[in-house]
Length: 343
Ligand code: ADP
Ligand code: MG
View 1 (cartoon, rainbow, N blue to C red):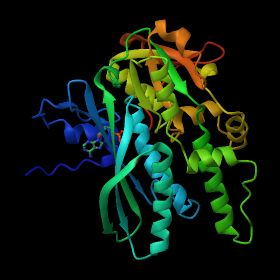
View 2 (view 1 turned 180 degrees about the vertical axis):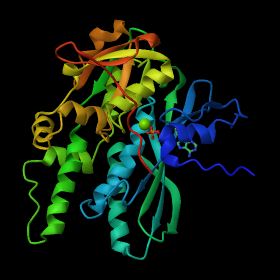
View 3 (view 1 turned 180 degrees about the horizontal axis):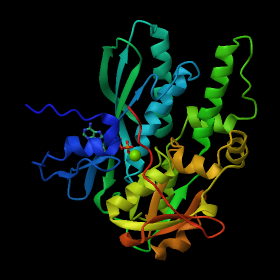
């Protein structure tokens, strides 16, 4: 009998997934991509593929009900899943919702979560097609599976970037992380002195980025309209550093990313400094931005810059060159593996 006992933290999330899944083989030609991208890709016709992605949100790990409105929770649970379908350059169409609840929750409370789920379904035009309901001994658990479609010749894998392709990011980064820091700070103050009211005035943008993130359907539509097919893509759930590493490792490339190109909202910058964090660190290691990080051929540059809310932050290099962040003084820092969640 094998009595070896490896602690989960020794491996980290990504090595653990690899350890668990590497012995599985594929029995069906229809399975174009299994584990290792934002969504699985399944061939459904000569020209089209189905995209499938699952994510779980767990109370106490991914959200804190002390400051997360239930409606927002439902909305976010949907958008974070849709984000993975957009990250394949696809269009989500259906979701299933599985929920585990304890008797701590009233029917009205669960209905509120579903109001948020419905709001997201209406905004993104998604059909709720099923799910599962069960009881939980402790916290609330929400698992959503998103299903989408994509034309096979437009799929954006993580693994298909090429040397010299431009690295592009949508929106701005780091805001959701600072929203979380604000909520945590006010929670602590409230728990120490319940007479004090939370002071969150003027932080709407950061709070909204944390509590009610959107998936970038608009960017995927614009790329389609301008006939730009990303050569690779991933969504930014674990921080820019981690996602850059994923694209580089999957595509077997290195890259140079320029610090002064990383898009930051002014409120992110001022709030980061209040927390004694560098704004760039919030962007690199924060997470939950749900923006898109993708690459395009240099020849698409002129078309690309006509699309609003996109920023070229660097370019891919040969693998041997390594993965670097270059600061304003031209100093070079290796980007390290980040984004593993401790168990
Ligand atoms: P994302 O951050 O885009 O949601 P993840 O990091 O959660 O992606 O997952 C990366 C890849 O690993 C995906 O292809 C996902 O389907 C797969 N994966 C994650 N956990 C497991 C598991 N326990 N068993 C099989 N595949 C998994
Ligand atoms: Mg993803």
